Length: 236
Image 1 (tube, rainbow, N blue to C red):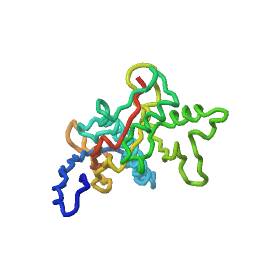
Image 2 (image 1 turned 135 degrees about the horizontal axis):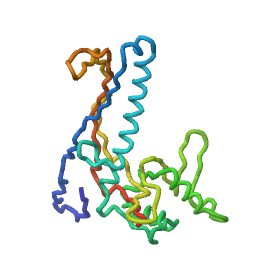
Image 3 (image 1 turned 180 degrees about the horizontal axis):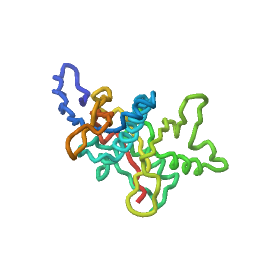
């Protein structure tokens, strides 16, 4: 909605916004672990352990998808969404990341998205930024809060993802993002389902093989609904 200044008794304009319904498809992910009847009898905690490993596999698979997912049979990652668009900010120097890039990226984020903005990068990039501050600049970048509170970089919360690029030297390297993350929407069909397959069958004669299986599946999707709410640094 765009508001306006109007004179006394002047008719107000029609400021109805254009509404567009985001469409975020959900995709199925799955995992399967077969095991023999014997180990199922001998290892009392087998099913509980496999469930724990399924949860870990889910976390690792989604961690990649939320950064670089292609959008084909999987969620669309935030880097994938922003590449090639106006949200990408090129580094000032070629194949180099400098403190000036940090401030240029933050300054490029539109004002309306600054209050809720947060950083995202690989922890290695955070280590590099810490080394920018030397001598009387030691307080120029970071504020470390005590206890469970996160660190803040030039006033904004710092978050880490192992899947964001942390190397540069040639090509395109998207190493640092800042934005209002409420605009990156994750759609979950709540809950991962785990089912016990009581008997597996051999392919030769289609008779039981003396194995069972644990099958896990879940559905999720993700996309940016407003790319302008983000800025991403490309060290190129």
